[in-house]
Image (cartoon, rainbow, N blue to C red; front, side, top):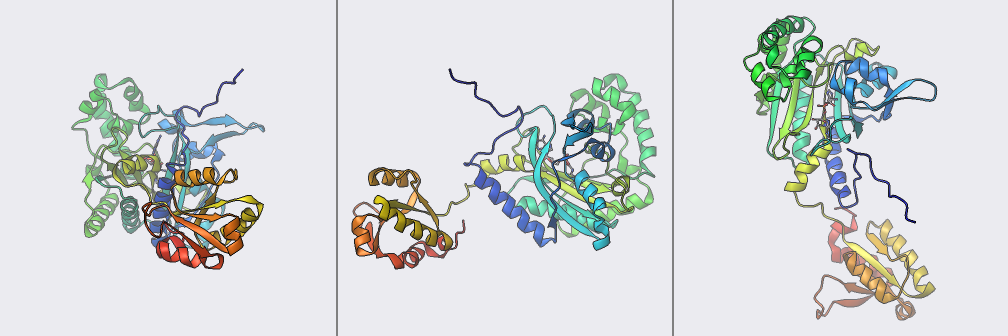
Length: 434
Ligand code: HAM
């Protein structure tokens, strides 16, 4: 009797070997840009105390109220899989007193996040983010650096057709007044709001602004705009951010309805959208936060950050970029124990020199090993049978040469194989690059 095969959980995916080179290339390119801007990696646990997310992201947000994977640990404590990275980074920043080491900390992270959302194209329950946080400066220069970094990262991986959207959420001084105005406006139209938004009206009225229901979109047209109600300090901050972006020639559009789904933001918020992704078109988003570090027990320093959804970026790239190039394969074919032992040493030397070397570890007939080499896309096959051993050579078959070419197959003395192949493949292959 066959047993039922187990499957991945809904909304979670395996990343299989045919896609992992795309992921690796993207991650390499991102890390390269991050390090040029002076950002260092921080790795935090995937599990945290539930209260961390409730205190930072906000108890009333969809993420915390509906979407976290939470459970009770054996000792009774409440734990959650992280739904995003900022809360954990700030927790770590406070716990290790990173502010003591330097006044401004530039940190980045890469890894899986978990949200129990309704799965669809570009939206998963386990997804991957690359995020960056700059903690320790209240100056608009920090926001401009972060937006510039986000755009550069997305360009470096090859994302095209993107648009940058900008808004300000005001601060603790000016947001309450705006909130009152907005609530008054929405209450007049409450009968046109969806059930969710009727509830949001009292707990989180700003969220009504970005509801995707048609009736709500119509109801909020003409709603008061936060940027018209900014206090002088927030107004100046926003103006400076905009002028910095103009200096960098980064096009942006003001989006008055952008509120973001996390409560920790003050002042600047931003999102990057990409074409061709359907409804889930936000590939990155972030903003400035004033109170988060203090809320988590740290000094009263502000921060700014963004995170990008790598799964979404990849959907876009798979449709628009050629596959990453694989290094050429050397395939070693042997006969008998003596040939195998000689091959072990040869493969070790070649790999240490940077070549990609494979053999058929089932050690079947030479014919079946040759077939395998062909299927694996070998560029050169290196054969070690009795006659080659006797002569101290390797028989090399050039799989890319035509069958009737004079140099389709040739012998190379064992000690010259490495130099010979390096020359034939050019420096690129010898250095193991892609
Ligand atoms: P967020 O907008 O919630 O921000 O997420 C950032 C990005 O993660 C989104 O733009 C999207 O590309 C991706 N993403 C979110 N949810 C999913 C999902 N279910 N499936 C696939 N991709 C998804 C944050 O997480 C903030 N921590 C950003 C930040 C950093 N703010 C300040 N610092």
